[in-house]
Image (cartoon, rainbow, N blue to C red; front, side, top):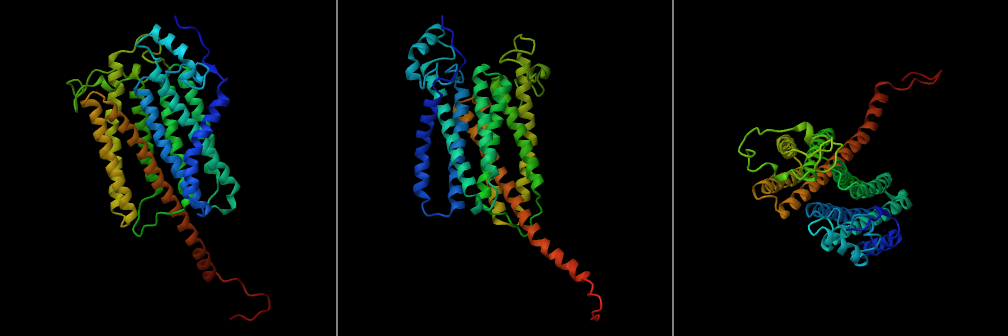
Length: 398
């Protein structure tokens, strides 16, 4: 029988931080060599672009960790059985695997889980570097460095979600919040990147307000939340076939069970086994809301194509390509029986959609700010011409 162990063991924390610093030094050195002599805003824009790339990788690795059932490969936090790596926990892992050969703890799963933690801590270290550099050089930057501070704060929140994902044994609501938190982190990094680049999207015939992009982004985030709920409850295969579900256009569903948020994995709120009808309800909600997302994205990319601006058309092309990518990977999950490659592609596509929409919103906001600054002096001069100041007392009228 597996020996009891603490769910939280801080002993390896300093060693983990040291390892994360070493891992972070590799991309940091590459960035430093590439950006020598570049202006500071360009350096920081390149650094945030690098962190963005690694964060998308981290989201995909996190999806792989979940899809390979490796989320409890090391059932404590932040180390693995109180060790820096599975090398030091071989005895504990072997005992757990012997007790449950098909259980959550194996050598392979332990390494998958720890690689995810190593990468997450390295990304956190890079975000810390970017935030410190932003504050130290704030006088030379086009915008306030507060986006960097918000990003640093949020990566700490994500670390807490990661801890509770393990200590609460893959509690579905926590795992889904962890996924949504990753998307928030990605959006914050995009906003930070765009603030360093300061490249507003100025369009001659643009009628698209940033609020409409924000609305489409909100719809997308809702769909990602539903997708996370499908994945964390293992409801992907609850519906066989497409467009019908298990041979029915409207199958029997139990939404009350399926969308009870405060419950453990595989259980209802009362602690009984979750029914198959609940899993069908979870799957169908994601499938039906996908129609809303498709309509919203199509309307947005059509508006961008009509904008008369080459950059807007490039955004439309990117959104259209990612939409097709998501439809293909999502259908592959259902029709092909949830292959790992399709599931990972679906997660990566969702992250890229968030990044592109956030970038578009940021550039439209910058354009609105530029327009406001350009028209403000003109308004003041018109007001002055219409109402000239009164002549001083005793001065002749012109």
